[in-house]
Picture (spheres, rainbow, N blue to C red):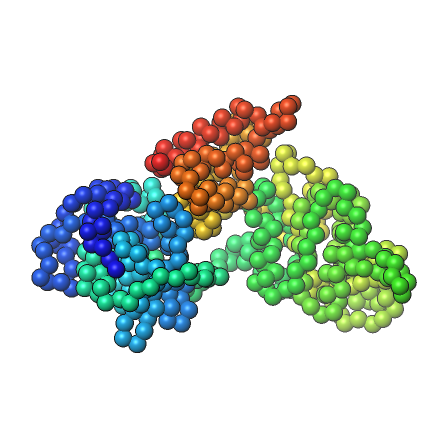
Length: 500
């Protein structure tokens, strides 16, 4: 049940133009029409403000199953909590509602997902409209800056008064319980909280993913280039999944053996038998009529022999040429062929069914055994250069890993990109998505055992970011100057975002 005394006595520093605590009055023009007998001047309900800000910051995820809405939110320590509102025939019931912030999150869920509380819906839309020039969800500094804008401040006050009023009039009638809730596998209804829809927006037809998806339907040879950790491999996987293709992967590395690339002959009780490796498996699936994506990760880390095997396999032949190799007639079209060493078998795959997507890192700091020479490049029909994702695209992923630290971690990642030895600085290499996710996972683990956020950020740095970004000295330890550089940059980010 809502504890109105605590709602007004708690503090919230996320919307500083209203203050942070105490009896701050809101203008009478913002008063809800749901309670005409209410006071002419309202005080800021800090619990309701904290709930509204959590939603705007993207710290609340939503999933609707039937008449049950599950929300993932945060407690005071930044740890994740699951709460639930269920719509019955005549009323709603709440699970894990708490007394100060979470009840207002559930009321917002009733309004924005179940379509209840029309005045709250209207006022929330007015708040989003006042912020329309800024992409949602917001970073904490963005919300702090927006709070100083008078239209945003007024719209927020209107939301708060209605939130408080709905809680006062209807919250006491909710049936409440406590339970350990299972986490949903996805939160596809989250966009409804920020004025969006659950229908995905049409993909940018010029985006790398759209370019690849279009071509995979007809077969493609594509090369994805970009810095380590920018999402090349994940892009290849997504394209395979989204197009319904079978995915076969091989990771390039020095010393790769035939058995790890093509396949091998194995002794069995029936005698020697050929065992498919990734390449043979991809060709055989396509030969059987399935659509296949062969994903070759870190192409230039393959040794010259295996790279040439792959390049040779990408030279397509006509149906007549294939017939000369196999002694059989084949449907008109173009085919890739793969000869299995020692097996006396030639596999073939229609170029319309087998797509080959290769990835490679770019830059002088990556250990590779080859280069992108013209003979290699001409085998690829599409070559795409990928950059690190924009903040708006990656921050939701980081917030899922550890919402309280997401903005700090992302900003630190960006800073390290211009802090390497190639830039005349100290770091051996910059952070990337994988490193940042490891960092956030460690921060979240520390938060879960009660470590304060600032301390957790500093401790997690030493076991995730430092080993990747810092050079090792002659004693086998990370370079002290590089560590200090990272600590200073982290402190600066924490101070800017007022992380205590």
